[in-house]
Amino acid sequence: MGTAGKESWPIPIGSPECPAVEGTGNRLCVISEEGGEIRRLGKRFRKLDLDGSGSLRVDDFMSLPELQQNPLVRRIIDIFDTDGNGEIDFIEFIRGVSQFSVRGNQQQKLNFAFRVYDVDKDGFISNGELFQVLKAMVGSNLQDAALQQAVDKTILGADRDGDGRISFHEFCTIVGELDFTKKMVVDV
Image (cartoon, helix red, strand yellow):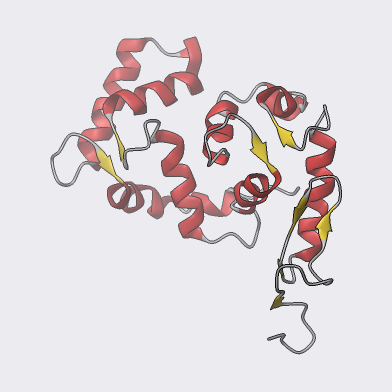
């Protein structure tokens, strides 16, 4: 079901039009106008895959100078790693990076930002999780007592239902107003 002038249609698995992504062992069977972007991601993935194993590990990401000083790299990798095996395969890479595409929607970006703080993946941001992530971000630039005060104040301000934690809906209510998702764009 293509649209006039655009490369956008479902392609059946096994079809000769279903391109293999060179060097990854994966076939992508839904191609759209982002096909060029997927090819660029394939090149980027292969460049990051230092040992040629077909998957990325923390060390592969840390080989990028721009990520070496980012305190949230491990959290981001954990979020990309949807099967929890400690490695990012090409499909996980595409799904993860697509959230930072200019085509990524606000809901995807809010969901990703929420998951950065929801360390235990229970659907809520607890006081301890917020402290843990913020501590990684500020390091020793802020004393623990001052950081805990900021965390307590944030939880109190965001927690609309009084359960002592922040739900995704509460997170979206507070963070969605900030319009930060337009800044969550990475050119890969």
